[in-house]
Length: 115
Length: 112
Image 1: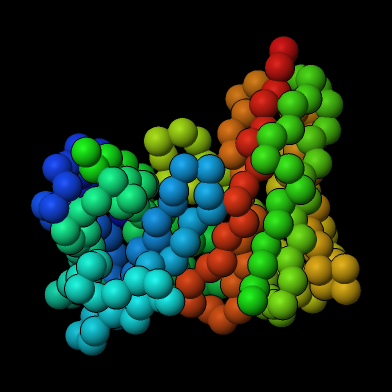
Image 2: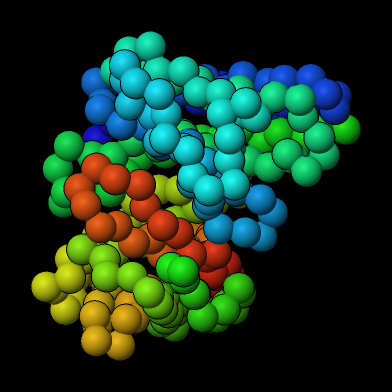
């Protein structure tokens, strides 16, 4: 299965600023997924990122707030813009397996605290 | 709207016992269901996948059942160990390669 390197692992940011989270995959993948996990909550899908096209955002998430880049088949970034304390959460990237017999692979997560 | 419920937020059991976790869903017809383990500060790690046409899957001390009529999956850890203490997430998928939908998870604590 794929291996994902996600950076940074954690950060504390001032409100009003932006943070860019990076995910590097060790193999080419068609789609990458970005999730948010708030304390005590399930993983909520933010958007699906395909290489060469705009990301598809879920209801409640907008491109201006969470711009995503997908420059190639092994890399993606998620930016959390104009942050507020409500954005404090764990952000995770994920990729689907090439074979449906295997599960999805996740990055180790970025724990974001906005003060 | 689609909804996934995991039976309890926390489950405490004694070492050696069988832990049983429940995942129920509504307004969804998944092609497959997956279980993940998540440790604090880490991303989820895949454990087992079961398809809609399968009733049961086993892997070492783990067993998953899937009842599409009841819209329920049961996840069993037999001979549980303190190292099994973690949060376990249920996830549903429809098509290959599309995003998963997750439950909130059940935090299992196994005491020695």
